[in-house]
Image (cartoon, rainbow, N blue to C red; front, side, top):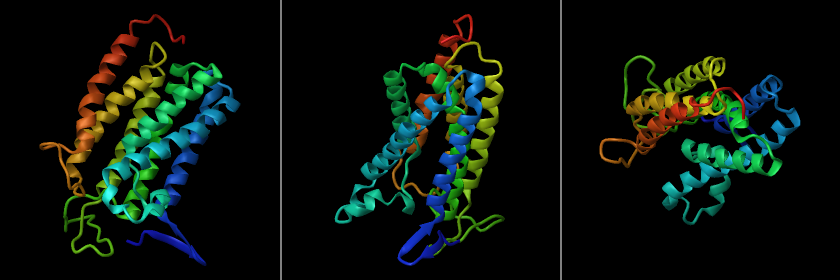
Length: 248
């Protein structure tokens, strides 16, 4: 499995960078297509997407650098080389979410309406991003020599491609959100559904990860976050459900 897609002179293009870009484009295309039926102007979508992209990438990279600072000491230029891999999903989720909230406040847009619209695109783009992880050789599973095992260059043993399981899980979450969007009572419940469904899916998929060097007791750092997201999503869904309509 070669992480490099192609080279053009001194420029090396990696599959990871390609998949991250495709994930953002796919998510933007979905939100742009869905916007009219949600009563959202496409010009507003483009503005918010821009800031969400900056906040998402910045947050994802920042958390990765903080968690792995030793590998960047003396190689500060590598901090901006996101095409080499090194994005932590939850950093991007919270960074992008904060950027969306701020952009909506500045433009006087409904945070709940835009949140429900944008959250449906998150697992869709994330599914493509996980394929990038698979091709890049990061976020891999436990050592595995059975069916579907993958041998990455420079690694002494084959591993299970848990990244593809994570990709399929995200597609399933996307389907759940499409279903939920048809029946939610008030704005914000699709976001709550995402926190709950994705949190549960991610918690169990994490048991297949074999790339962590640090754990919080028996749990991975992502599982600890999931332990907070799931009940938060349930509580948010119930509280918002006290509303009487789908208004803002």
